[in-house]
Image (cartoon, rainbow, N blue to C red):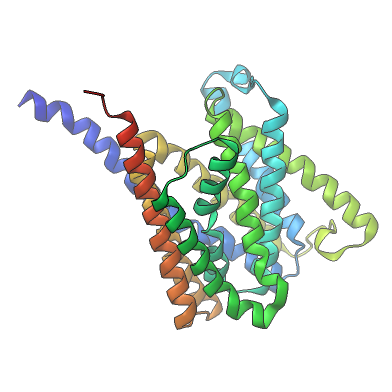
Length: 314
């Protein structure tokens, strides 16, 4: 009886983590869809959309910082690398929002999901993690699936179809850096400095873009109240979802939660159909399925290898 009672809180905590992860994955395409509406319907420059999200990200974490240790939480060992993560995420956001203006929501998100495969490659190259045959097979399959999604878009859009691919690579570098920095610095500090680095870099980009009169990098003041409303709602959703992910990973193991992130593609297909009358054709659908399958395989392989490496030696 005592054994069952002792296990129940842990089981409940894990279930809460899974529920949060599932909800976050289902909600994630919403701010992306709002960004697509802002870019397509209202002509808001992609850098302005990204800047709004970063400003809200930076300030949304301040109450948590004050609640969990105050300003001392912001002490980090390598400020430059934290700010660099913000710059990388800002660049990734620009590429992704530019893609959303030109291509279906589900396509862009599906191509972006080659990110786990890219992280695997970067971890082998820069973190000196041992390559594994199963990982290599999953990476190749994932890239093959991405090409199946990219190809029809490339025929229609040209090089623009590769924008989510560039976004995924930049985001993968951001994650690898985060994996390195999380060993010594707090999650809240990382969240804040990412927002700060992104805000400063996007501000500089918008200043240069305004002087050079580059449309997608031109600072404009939204005059339509609908635009202000969409920017605020999009940013609030993005900040809330980010915090939901953080809390989910605190409550449950990463290996258990990772597969639930692929629910995002299903949600993106539903939103794309509902808001933009977009539905993937059979070739794109097959490519998305391959990306999901290879990503799940990669997560399972990483989990199995971790368990083997942590097993006690007889």
